[in-house]
Length: 464
Image 1 (cartoon, rainbow, N blue to C red):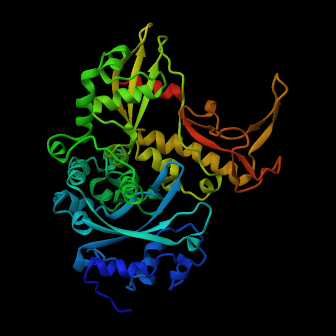
Image 2 (cartoon, rainbow, N blue to C red; image 1 turned 90 degrees about the horizontal axis):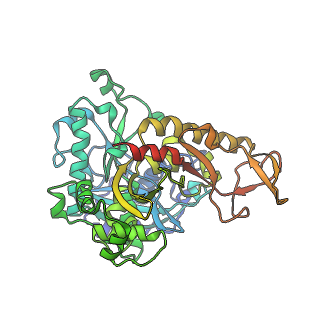
Image 3 (cartoon, rainbow, N blue to C red; image 1 turned 135 degrees about the horizontal axis):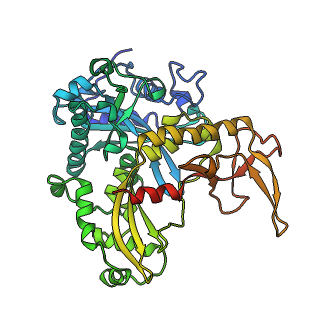
């Protein structure tokens, strides 16, 4: 197969258009999909390289279209009730611990290869094999000045850990846009560098976080007005977290009465707390829909501590698809990626007996050991239950005569951090099961989601 040389981005786009609307099964000229169904997403990029752009798959360190300085990325997008989002993080290149120690961000192999990214997008369809999915669009992504400033800090955090002999402690939650995610078989294989430093250093890849790419694609596909909290010039002096805290901290100790007056808030709904924080940050819309919060994987949460020192609510996540769960491995699962890349901004309000007072902001992410031990246990238990068909364990008649189903999903009492509970409008709001329930024969069951226990959240809030 000869190696074509595309001389401009226009030629790339024109060539890509020949594949738009075609299924991967039609583009798979070397039969890479045979027998894999929808388990190996890594072949999709190879199919685009061979079946659309007509060049041989290679492992060269430079960008795919080296003469243009453009790297090709094949990625899936989802259309959900919350809008368009990226299916997962975007891998850039392998993290070489030895060379990263010697390279600044500007000199790094990663930056030289990935300054300009050409995305070939397909729409990910739940429950379908990859061969049945189609290419839908493309775009050339260049990083903004503000993005680069955040990524420089991200790279420095990763590099500093390596230089300080802490490479084994690298976590996706260390950074905002640029992640160092685990790679290799089972995502737990040790890197050869581990022998040099006598530490359990895992193989890793540089990657763009799912949240970062979701914000990029929303700007592309929608007319959504996305506000920014900071300017690039601010990021040259301080980190994103420092800027956010710097704007919010002056309001600590203010009562709700004072905050309502300051920010002209009259609503009595729970959304008023977000309006207070939005006012502190200088944005007019929803905090969670700002450029930096979407890209950085931040999520704002209000926590109200009652006068008795307790909180009322467990913390929920979006409902999951039962069929998707059983086809996911742990570190590629939606649950893992949601938590591993998520940083929570808890706005804590305490009841002083008369009204709520803004107590403080707590920035938090789930510790890796809790996620990979207790989170993994709950995920694996749920997966085994779904695959075995042992969903319903019996029935119970309530005092009002209503009969309810009892299920085997992981309960709050069995894990100190996570459990599974319904996340549906009613019992009839369901998702299809991968295996019919043995006891009832049901082929669908009420939507469920993962929850973090309120007792654990309260313990987190009490930490300094």
